[in-house]
Image (tube, rainbow, N blue to C red):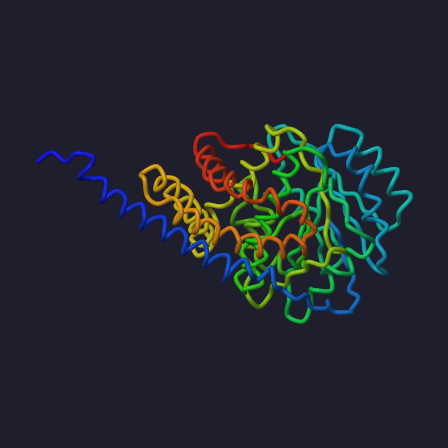
Length: 378
């Protein structure tokens, strides 16, 4: 028996309807029950306790960024803190600048690493050295190209550590500049944040960002630091948090004064390399986190692919459009409230286009990492 297209078409349409509907239902679940946590999150006042803090920054050939942003960290309004800069085998002017700055600021401590011909250092190694050199129990991590939103960054972040909380997860947005690439990078940062912050608020933390993260020094050493994933180039932030964070020991801080703003890439190719490096860590998450993140992305793919397929197959476009509008309205409400909290509200009007783009962008980067991996952190 030979089946022609007219015979197969009803079956194909039914399958497409089923997969489109499944994608829609799962997407609505994520927006209404997961991502809404950040959208309706009510900030709690951090503890007023003043705890000594060690801020750690790893820098490799970052002299320009250190000149621009390090003073904003050193001049925080906080009574007791030190800033440790790990000069990770730099060959630019970092050493000279840091020597000069160390004479000006008594709270700056510079740790210098020298490249060994037979042993290449990694950010995890540099960060481990910085943590060992820290004088205080409370650690705050940021990057050389980051600038705190204000002079109370340390106060807001450290106030979340203590009283059974060993970890604080913050937000590290990218600076607003002109051009489509900047919006692309900032939306990527926002969407990543709505995922990890919402999961953490729901008691299921799975990552933080090294641009704005804090934890106790004792937690780091009690879990042997980065030992379990030292062979992976990335993961000094997300894999460590994935390993040690739980519903009891993790807090979230999203006051706008607690943000640290980073310089975004201005070249698409360099941003792609950065994304490839960051996404190397995903396969090493706990299974429940891989399932949650994977299902969210897969459901979006089902929704878009089979929605378009149904229109091509002649299914009433009004029904497909109605489903899309329903999801879009809910998405815009959730995104709008969350973007307002995170200072990204100007992205709301382009978010439908960027949502479609990233639905297929993330799996394409994951697939490319199977064949070509990034081997250096800087």
